[in-house]
Image (cartoon, rainbow, N blue to C red; front, side):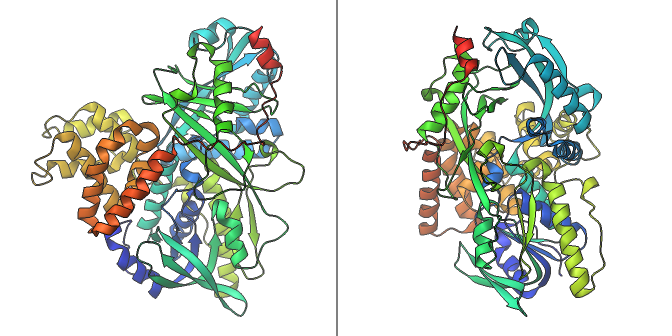
Length: 577
């Protein structure tokens, strides 16, 4: 293959040519975190790799999670000890390989009389969690009295509070993690494209040897040849299996998880909270501070609606607001406080007789008679190990059919794009380095640089370099120049094509800074039109598509969601006495 073309939107035609003219070892369908991980693992082993995504990267589940790299505490309830150990190990690996977007988050678990966990049970569970997940000494659990729990989080309901457990999870930006994995795969010569929908598979001697895909931007079709095809379609995995006629007895059970966002001043948390909901389903929920907001989730209900645009319902909102009111009664939060929301789909493996929350999060691999390899289930935290297992099977297949030498995975120690350079050991060091190195940019503040570093890590230098150029939008104020430099970087290095790609998946502004979007949109759309040479019709289409997504985060379907059980259990009764 020729020199790799990275995720540059202006080079789409060249990437399409590479797809057409190369026989790949493996083509991955799906640009979420699972597909991204598979592409990186395979490319890092020296395989010729292509990845196709029919929407934007991470447009599905991988931008709509709780945005935590779990150590697996919740899996202890289901006695999934092996899963706890694996995700705990993976969490440490991720933190080491992508420290700019995976960082420790203190988590407080309040313990109430008649709650799902008693004080001794919680202490034992957190101790076991520390052991199985390999938690470092500085982040091991500590048990708190009722008074120290309230001192740590004064917003908590005080009645019937027995104490609390303090432990650590790791917070991330799920969509940005996906992008950094894809950028790293591209650096290892993977050909990566978004907005390319698979239409059909090709076969030779009853084995898949390629596919046809259509560009959702231009309508152009491309035929791609490959020795192996991997289906990492997430919620769409069964549809991609159906194209191969490969649906087996084991199929997906989609469940929906909803999160809402409220202003931080309405829920001024001191740290993240993981608490019981007051419902008969026995679920727990997170309340997590992020910048000037806090987000709350999640629900877990069976789902059979739109895969592209899962809707938040009034029942979802009532469920989460009810949980907030039970645990943080003095905050007096209502639906009117919500400033944004999102709904994501979990592609779990169906198990007869089990409720959504009882379904295992463990991944499974299916291989059809025609050779289609499908990965389903799994969690954000375990993406790297899932990818390793899939590519191990790809290597065996390539070895048997094409005498390819078997190579082992190397991603355990592979630093992701944006990980810290030699100039820094942590986010603060990197922020100070860039402040000193680019001090000639008048008006550049520590807050601005830190915000960029938290998104782009070591790649922040590309954004700041543009600001040093006297010809880069000299007529605009610094805050607008920074935004436009950030956007240009995302177009040329992260394959941004639409306003939503930038304002949702690359920067999360729609979720956590929605109030700024009307001001930013004209800047974004005009710069995109300039770089990508939008026609007037394309510009109007992009604006209309954005407006729908902008409105959707506060548009709650009033359909009755009977899958949510609002029967209160004893916790709520005890809290109200």
